[in-house]
Image (tube, rainbow, N blue to C red; front, side):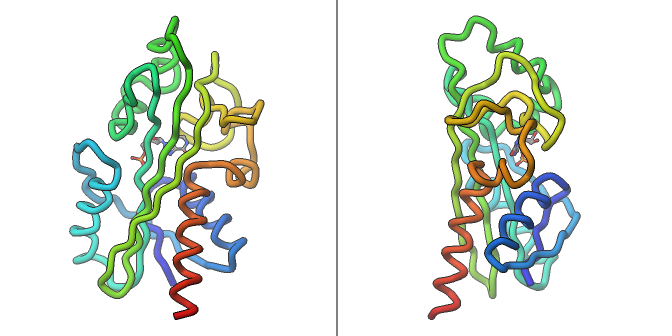
Length: 185
Ligand code: IMP
């Protein structure tokens, strides 16, 4: 059984539902870990794993995600958590006023630890930043992100709808493909 280590209920809801569709069950390990300031999401999960390896016995999964806004050269990206806490959706919308483009990408990096090995999986979802906050589901920047091809923000979608297109769901798909190859070998 894989433990998904996160203090974010929303992430657990999405990942557990998507994995269940593939027949994979996970448990929630509600525990925080150090998140270093660095330039790449992958470095954040790789460092966190060096700490969690000593704390967790079995297989575990961690998720680091970020919102990369084109008009800001990819900011807040790895600093998304800090920007969300300080500015929230409203402050981010304010910063974007008059921007030349509202294009943005959500990215997720997963790290899976199994029997001493670390595997990393990526997922991305392109879209635009909405003109105003919409919706009451999800978490974080969900009310201001509209994935390409959709009319709704993530916060207006059910978990199933978000899981059909999201960055995190893409990372889950890569993880499932990996678990299948492990089973076959
Ligand atoms: P972290 O992966 O928990 O470090 O997330 C960084 C920031 O991005 C936090 O403020 C999260 O709330 C936000 N975030 C991460 N994933 C999502 C998502 O799927 N939707 C909306 N906000 C997200």
